[in-house]
Image 1 (cartoon, rainbow, N blue to C red):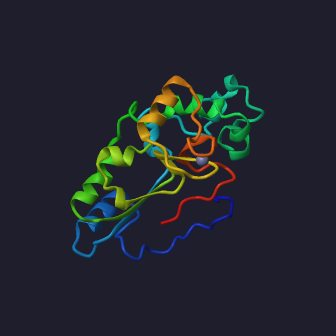
Image 2: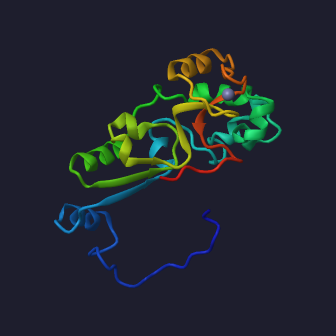
Image 3: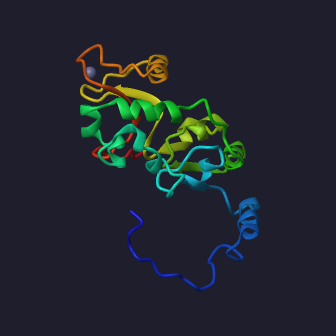
Length: 197
Ligand SMILES: [Zn+2]
């Protein structure tokens, strides 16, 4: 994703008066605009204090050395998690919802929903700040999953949220009551498929 070359289009805009924020705002307030789709990436959550994953120096990957991973991405690899879930649980404690507050951008998406303009909010973030801002769950597609639910990675049995939260807080790895498999929040790991509506 994002690796293909793209060429700038320099013709006139087809819907907006110009390619700037005032033109977008004007169009959104007009009767012609009835359905707004929003696509959110890491940038909307960095202002909430959540580190993004790839920025050199400040990104999550460059701060993972202390977890003794063979390479940073291993923390989100399903096969590595099976062998050693400790680094992910350690990281999850830092990222767990409840420690961060939605930003103005998240609140703006809620405002769109309040005005019945929001069709769908696609997000690749796993922090659930869209939900915390009050965006209705049925309007959100969390393409990389989220901390909002959790399952056994083997038999997919659902696990109670309070139990998951306690496990992340204490660092006690939980195992499935049915099959003994490891349990993790429904964040999409490398080696798993992304969520589609
Ligand atoms: Zn299980």
